[in-house]
Image (cartoon, rainbow, N blue to C red; front, side):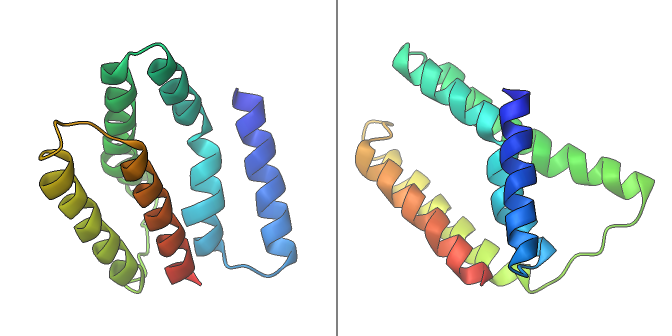
Length: 132
């Protein structure tokens, strides 16, 4: 799995750089998807085996780890410069995601349906389009 993710990330970065796409867009889309491939596979397998707790725990744990620990380790090594223009699309998508989780998922017997999956994929597409 590691080699597949490396292949996807390296190939996508090469193509994006060839077309002149900025590093921030590359890192927030292609690299993030490539590094999430192991979590995607784990969630698919856990869902197929009816282990929903493992699927949800894997995603939440991985994201909390990535958001909290990795930037902190990077900042200890060297300062990280953050572009405030990222805030607009991130806050917008965060609010929509919180709305869906709180007002829709918890009302709907705490089940993530195909409908929710489609909405989250569309939100990701909206997020990517906001980057451009």
